[in-house]
Structures are given as structure tokens and as C-alpha cells.
Amino acid sequence: MKKFFQEPLPGVAPASLRGKLIVIEGPDCSGRTTQIELVSKWLELKGYAVVQTGLKRSLLVAEELEAALQGNVLSPRTLSLFYATDFYDQLENTIIPALRAGLVVIADRYVYTLMARAIIRGAEPSWVEAIYRMAVVPDLVLSLQVSPKVLVERTFQAHYQLDYWESGMDMGLSRDWFTSFLKYQRKLRLELKKMEERYGFEVINAGRSARSVDRDLKAKIATILDGFSDSE
Image: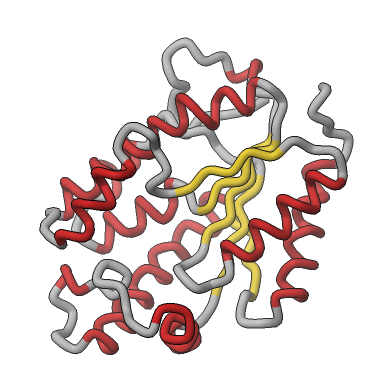
């Protein structure tokens, strides 16, 4: 039976959530998008119906959140609450219905990244945890880990520039974007590392070939699918 971090959403019976929730965590350019597509196609070929979710995908506020991020003017607390709104809209309207229908939900990052981002920007952990107290506990959390230096190389290869927020430029870590990026990613990685044991992350070395990472992800996912079908 599904669990919630502290309490279920009003009107949601945990026993009614028959599907599986798989979370793939990892920084930008860690290979999340590629791996999620590979895993989704693999699951569908095995006969599972798959629904994908992720950050900034809420029909309610995603466009407004993206526009606000482009303006680079959000305070840490406002940013946290904006992302929480995006998350809960998806939880209520996408994740919960899919789990009730017995589907496999693959989340491209989850509340862990949101909590870590807020905490390294000065938020009290207890405040952040209270915000996400009604989140569903995933069946599996796969954390893709890549060194900050490799992330820099991949980011420049993919985008030719660094992102303002993913470089932590709002935090005053350094005026130099490259230095700020490295410092920010190390802080984020350390905070997520604190969560590994508490929340049961399965850590995957994503600094290897996509094929090697794909093989490891599928092996981990197969363990929670044993005996499960969307017709249960």
C-alpha cells in the first residue's frame, strides 16, 4: 500500500493507489531525459502503461513559473512556493489519477530536488518538509550522479552556456558563472547525499555510457515490477 510523507491528500485513500511511482533524480545534463525515454519505451514494450511527470509541467502554473524564472527576480521563498504549487497540481491531477488507474508513473525529478534547492538557499528543512508532507512516497528513487566538472562539459556541449538558476547565480556564490556553477552543484549534491539513506535512494553512476546506465536502471526497476501488472 502506498504511503505519504506525513499525511495523504484530502480524499485520497492510499489503498486505492495501485500503480507504481518511479522517480529519477539528477542534475541537468546528467542524462535524465535520455534514460527516462529509454525506460519508458522498455516498460511499454513489456505491456505497462506509462505516464511521465516532472518539474514545471503543471497546466496551472508551469508557463507562469517559467516566465518568472526567466526574469531572475524570484526570492528563495517565493521560488519554493511556486515550485510547490506546480508539484501539487501535478500530484492531484496527474500522479494520483495515474496511480489509481494502476499505471507506472515516471517522475523526472521529484520533491527531493525541490527540497534540496530550497535548503541550500537558506530555507529551514522543517519548513520545506512541511510543504511536501502530502507527497506520495515513491516505490523507487533512482539518483543519477555525475561530477560537477563533467556536468559543466555536458552543459556546454548541449547548450553552449550555463543556466542562471542551475549555476546558483542568485546565491552570490561567485561573480564568475563557471565558479558559481561548480560551487552550486557541489552544494546541491551534498544536500541530496544527506537524503540518500533517509529516503532510500538507489545511486547510479551516470558518468558512464548511456547503455551502461540504462542497464542498471532497468535492473533496479525490474525488482519493483515483479508480480505487478496494470490490471491488478
